[in-house]
Length: 123
Image (cartoon, rainbow, N blue to C red):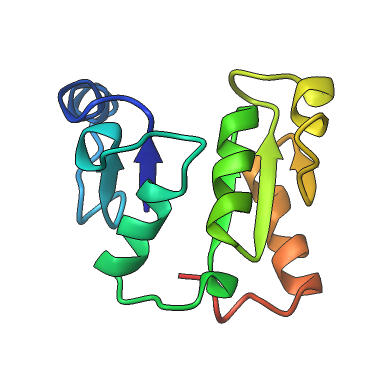
């Protein structure tokens, strides 16, 4: 699932440029246009949970490249809020939000989920 602070029109334009399709390359797209409050409020995560009928945020992992991404996951009560250094903020900035982990590559999530025994539970 992809959630973004961009509005729907911008997000869909970016997905089109990447040649990504909702339902094929990502399960769903939740944008700032879909909720009344943007990050760091947890509204986009809450909407995604409703969409996928997830009632317990301990089954959700938030990965983001900014401080407000990490704060969004924390406010939603996600099992893990993880920073990734491939975008908006660097390691020092991400660490200032006290994430559970900071990774440099998305593939680093696999051993983290295995360690937390979450491999079969993450949606």
